[in-house]
Amino acid sequence: MKKKHLLIGLITAGFFASCNNPSTTDAPTSETDSTEVVVEETEEEGETTIDPNQTSFGPNKVDTTVAISTEELLAQFEGKTELEATFKAEINETCSKMGCWINIAKEDGETFRVRFKDHFTIPVDTEPGTIAYMSGKAIQDTVSVDMQKHFLEDANAPQEEIDAVTEVKYGMTFIADGIEIVK
Image 1 (cartoon, rainbow, N blue to C red):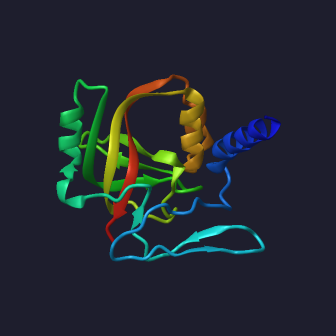
Image 2 (image 1 turned 45 degrees about the vertical axis):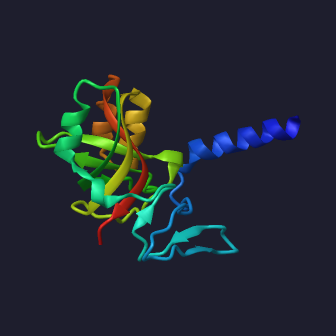
């Protein structure tokens, strides 16, 4: 019984620490038909690297043929609390520490966050303007002040911007179970 509690504690600690540690990355969990996923682990450091030619990430493969636009996603989500969808968008920003989230721009200049189910990651050097297809679920989400500050720290925002966050934010978040990056 003690081993079970220890294991649960270690998993929980690893989950919360994973986005704050820029020296490790999660291994990719899916493959594409045309690209073999190559994961290398260095024995000295225990670090995982992602094949630079890899384009598909997450536990599910994205069917790009059914993707809707970002505008269609937002219109279909209007008045709902959740929506399963696959959509195509231009990446606005990527988590600079782990690649564990991205922001997508809306037509009004605002953004919404895409988080990755089971905390999978994409390359941190994914440039703004990169086109991606994502599958998963859009949800109405409450983002605490602490989590907003954490996201800003991940984005290397200025301390003034981080300190200015004082209210809980409520809005749409997309939880992706797969992402296909167009290279």
